[in-house]
Length: 339
Image 1 (cartoon, one colour):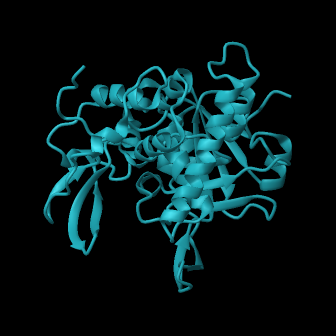
Image 2: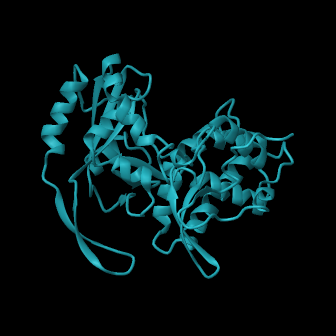
Image 3: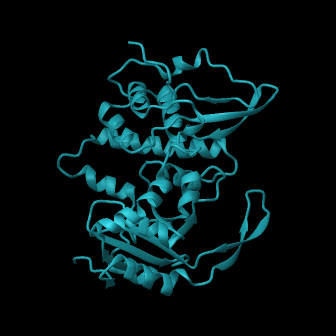
């Protein structure tokens, strides 16, 4: 059955005003949250969550499920063995992150991977209505949609706060929550999901003036240049390749089209015996940064088409004195590349 929105509006402004009055202005709910150390503290959370889409998509599924559908379509660039390797990469990275950071659980790790470009079982929502409309206006389609869902829609579907980890920068900017999809409710536009979870879909036209109005907001929500966490995924994939071997050229290109190409940048705080204490910093803390150079270097580190060894970059690396800014050499190449 073809998808039909619950209500269509004649303009984006009309849709925004209606959803704002009916849902977004409802008072927040006070809940008790718990830290990883077991302490509880009060939090105010929105009663409704929002999702913006630019386009007349017939389904809304998680990106991992969409990848599975792409695998059986004609012209898909990844071979089955590449898809299996991608799945192992995502699983191993999630485990790796939870082992490295005691305050990061498995779902939080998956949320980080999702926000920086890898497919997962999560579908993004936000507690900020304006951000949902910014995403709805961000594409090229003349049709926009915004979904509205109660923050606690059903015991059958888990909604997770993706902002909890200290360096979940992009999720924090977006006020992001994630819906952990299930096999019983795989599509948030299906009649079953809309009925069971009380999701409402609203549709409206997108004019060039709407797109321009939200352009700066959308750029701020996804901009990697001033995001201290933007380089973490590229860094961890590089270390993964060092440990387990290179990726096929096709899988390399597929990932490079999706992950943030940014350096992993640090400010050194102190040295404690053999350990160094650092704080993450964004790429704009560095004197120069050329995205095309970084893209090419990462391609050479990951792809089996090249012999380049990223670990060679670590041989002469020395941490600067406290207060100094530096970047992982495998993710930052300010000097011209030698052949």
